[in-house]
Amino acid sequence: MSEYPWIVEAEMSAPGVKVQIRTGYWSVRDPVDRYDSEYVLSLLLASPRDYGYGRPMSGRFARLGAMNFIPVEVPLQFLGKIPGIRRQVRCVFDRNRFEALVGHDVDWYEERLQACFDVRNSQLDRAIRRLAEEVLAPGLGCETLVEGLGLAMMADLTRYLERPVLPDAPPP
Image (cartoon, rainbow, N blue to C red; front, side, top):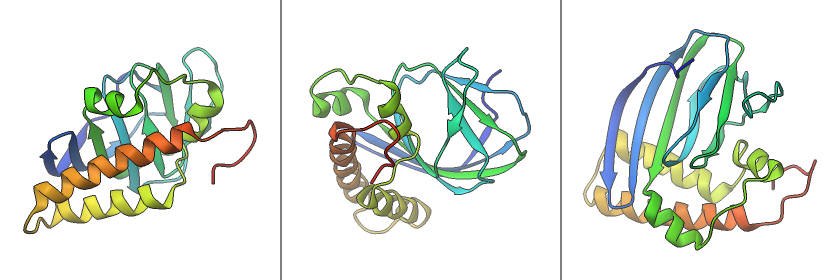
């Protein structure tokens, strides 16, 4: 099953990052398969808190937090139990730029994936919310601001991914 359609309310691009505010309606109860070719950090602005993620064929779903990071080329499934409107800010990072910053292939072991799907980082939270404000009401120097925040977010994500992740330990 494919992902439900999104309506893009606002969008802005700068070198290395594209930011969207989008709304969609989740009407299915079946898992949605995802296999992304881009690195995506998103923050749910309005949504029933019923999301889960899992690996295809595993039959297990874990909680999906308000902010999540979708890695490149990792097969995933998402499940929403309650139909309803979802609104999110979505940051798509240039794959080459992000991978150059990380400097190596990331091992997407289960605990790291769990941390990706419930990102709890105050710097990332502030930055993505500021990007949402900028996209909805662009001001002077908006492209520079979007590019700068995008670069800062890539650096913060890299640090977030490099911290030790212990099984059953909540993210900081």
